[in-house]
Length: 287
Image (cartoon, rainbow, N blue to C red):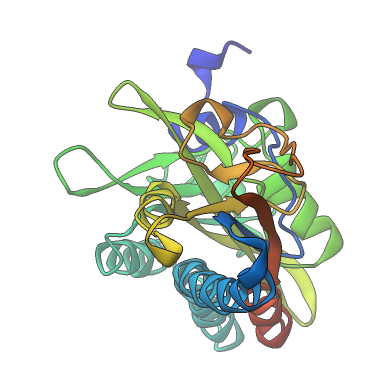
């Protein structure tokens, strides 16, 4: 299959492959500061407090996407338990959810073959179903600001393993590795929250929230600890997500012991202040 044949949804997830695993949703920040050795210990403590605050901001942004995917999955589960399996109503619910969340690129509600109502064969020409009748719509904000829909290509070749196959197979919600996607001629980083839809404890489908990471990158770039420091965002697999050097985004972090050496100042790296806030959100929200 050619890349051009992929759907918009799967182009997003296949365009750069796995950059880093965030199934445990680890987010870490590192800031590097040049300081005199006489105040190094105190400065490091203050830097850690600052970076912990920055980490909280990042966790909040991703947490909103988690909440949206989770509450959508719970709403679908509630409808299923009440016997409501109307495809039009489910699609309309997702459209309203995407409309209410302009910060998201888009959302998916997809079911296993015959996983919604056992009647896929009767819906081969339905607006939210593929050629086999499987319910697999992707709802996204188009260039005009409207919510558009497309039918997903649900094959491993089209890139479904990370965001659909794995969470359904493992019956476990997760956050995908961030991946690069070109928007307006520039590569930006995105990530996807995949939340499992269950019926009687069995995974029958999934909801997703696609989140641009560009705002988080810009937010980190604007931080200046102590008026001169730099804050960077590192993914769980030690890849840069936010760095003032755009060429390093998505690349492996190679920390040096000193940013510079002079006779009058020593450089100290305040490394990897981790936060488990996003991981905690995933664990506490998991059904």
